[in-house]
Length: 116
Length: 112
Image 1 (cartoon, rainbow over the protein chains, first blue to last red):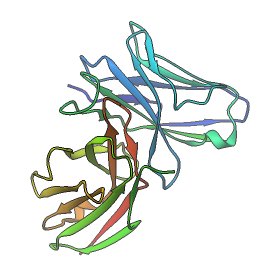
Image 2 (cartoon, each protein chain N blue to C red):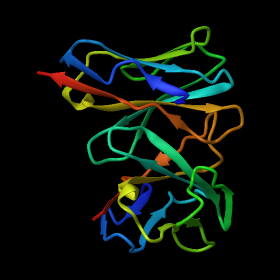
Image 3 (cartoon, one colour):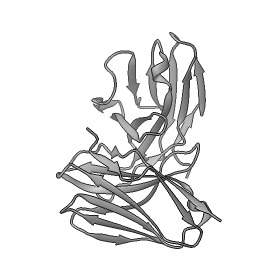
Image 4 (tube, helix red, strand yellow):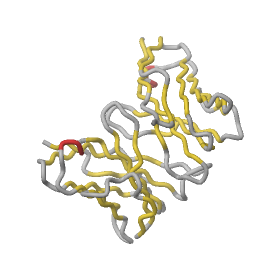
């Protein structure tokens, strides 16, 4: 059973371009979470999705950022008109049920976005 | 402010010695805590977790201690090995909240 797959691993974008980050959860997992990690900091929650639904996007900037988890295919985190401050590692996690208690969230390897 | 934090940003340990990594949290409602290990260029890897109705939990070479009175969490690694070199994060989850709040991390370096 493959783990959480994220691609690309590294992404370089010029200011003003769009960045698309993909996350394929573990097989059978219908809960997806996106986190952002700035250098030498902990991960910060961005958004929680279930299939075709955004459950909580309170950690995601209101502008330029959007996320989806369609019925078929990977979850996508989209950042429009990227700025230098968007440079970070973006991690996706998935779980079989909503996390907490005995339900573990498994993290992917992350996408490292660099805005030049 | 940060609801979860670590006391020391770095820890250097002699191979074979025990490591203790500390974490403080401020949210009294937090009832689930997790330690993650993150190696360079990789995502966080689950190590061990503990619920608030426990004060100690043991895994393979690792022990997590929870002191709810002072809101303190620690991770003990027995007989530290070179492969234990990584950044360690504590994370907490409050009530029915599925969001994990991470501390800034402690970098553990194992000396041969």
